[in-house]
Amino acid sequence: MVRWVVGAGRVLTNEEHTLVMGVLNVTPDSFSDGGQFLAFDAAVAHGVQMTVDGADLIDVGGESTRPGSEAVPAAVEVDRVVPVIRALSREGVVVSIDTSKAEVAAAAVAAGAVVINDVTALSDPEMASLAAAAGVGVVLMHMQGTPRTMQADPHYDDVVAEVTGFLVDRVAAAGAVGVERDRIALDPGVGFGKNLAHNLALLGRGVLQLAETGHPVLIGASRKSFLERILGSLPPEDRDLPTVAAHALAIANGAAIVRVHNVVMGTRSARVADAIVRGQDISR
Image (cartoon, rainbow, N blue to C red):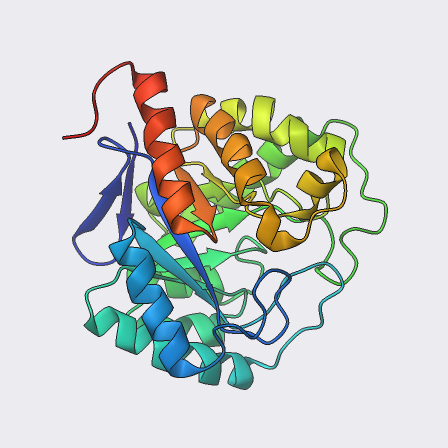
């Protein structure tokens, strides 16, 4: 069991069940649902519904990080996410901001976000000090390269060792500026500068090693293209069932949080995985 301290006085834990993070892309170009929730009303309604469906927190993003994507100005990102975060927070939804920009994170936290989910592991020089001062939860993720270039022949000598070492170093760097250890979750970055073999290694041996650090391990395999490389041509909306398999095995290896587009399927499958792994009735 792991504890993840997010926001002031709020603790998320996988003691009762694996935590489920619902994906809310307020973008026109995300790989799975770009444009579907760009409108304010649609975004808020979807975020609330995902919470009703069992999500423990909602990850709101205003910039696509799909392979080949271009960066979005911070002001545009803020305009997309802040009204949605403010509205969801007022509804009692636990909100995470998916951004690598300190300016965006600061506006999101002011609007009610209690987690900063950073695919660049606090590479913005102001991000770590912001997280420390705000007292929010943090997700540190590994990515080789940038979203625009990350899938251009990624290479590792030992992907598990290198990703683990990078994240441990980033924990130390965050701690050096005051981010408390129990506020940090780790994400190996499935699909972010990795080929199929790299992704499979991280979902297996990688999760096991990261779980040994004592930090909550977050896995986001939802609808990603490596599933298509295993099964053949599948549009993103048809990858929810393969996602279930990847996440269930990650939970068996020690993942504490799964990030999903389909919250109903993600929550139900996580509960079954929990029951098997823990060997007990967790339906109470």
